[in-house]
Length: 130
Image (cartoon, rainbow, N blue to C red; front, side, top):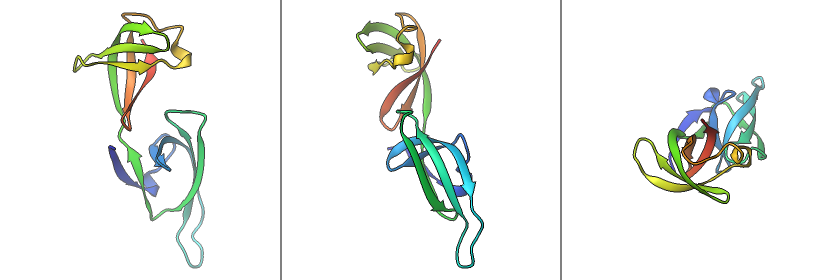
């Protein structure tokens, strides 16, 4: 698992974080004032990177750290399509592998097209079709 530690102060909208082992993108952060006996706390709302239907909300002290997944964005060319999976070749390493085609890209996907995919938590996800 390729992650790094970031402070809660760095967890702003648009940052990638791990919540309960699920990679998410921060949608909003609300910070409460410090109390008489404590630190300020952050209320974070995040949605899943792999499954956008997953919504996570948690509260954490601003002095704590949180894990952030390392996201690698790569380009590949579609070699063949079989059902809802595509066989693609990475443009940098020339490695070939099978990847699931998301519903929103099934109409655009064709042999010879280029796709942008993300390597995230030992998974590969198509994010754009060129």
